[in-house]
Amino acid sequence: MYENSFFSKEKNLGKRGFSLREKNPPYILGVVMKTVFVFGNPLVKEDSIALKTARELGKKIKGIEFREIRALSDLEKIPETLEIIDCAEGIEKITVLEDLKMIEAEKKVSMHDFDLGTELLLMKKIGKIKKVKLVLIPKEYGLEKAVQETRAIF
Image 1 (cartoon, rainbow, N blue to C red):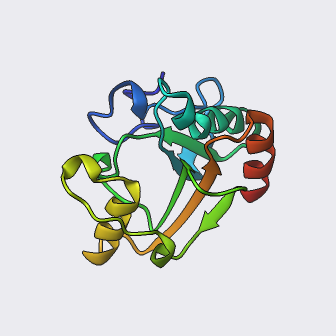
Image 2: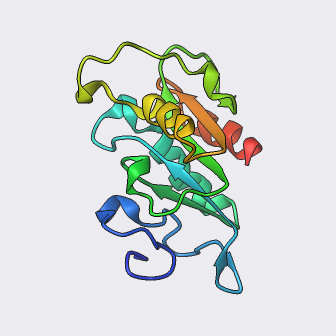
């Protein structure tokens, strides 16, 4: 894997911090063209569609590294435009959000309620992120459909 190479500059990401393009990393002259961060839980079926989609996209799209991460706070440096793939409830088709105001803010009771949407809103408020492209895949989407529609976005 690329855990200890220049393909994974972030530290302490463990097994989830590797490039999903294991055999053919996306680079030109050793430089990754773009990184898309992917969220999800491979152990929970409803929360793994983004991970599975990214693995398939990694085989088909050159120049993009799809990197699994647990939280944005794992990143040492946040890119100018933060691109993320995740799954979501309550949507019928793949949705691209570039305006964080569209994320519903739910009342948080504890740190266990702190999700990606909350983390993005907080990081935007404190100036850590400037632009976001959030690609949301419905949790109940089929893999082929998710790959086809998400590929058209990237």
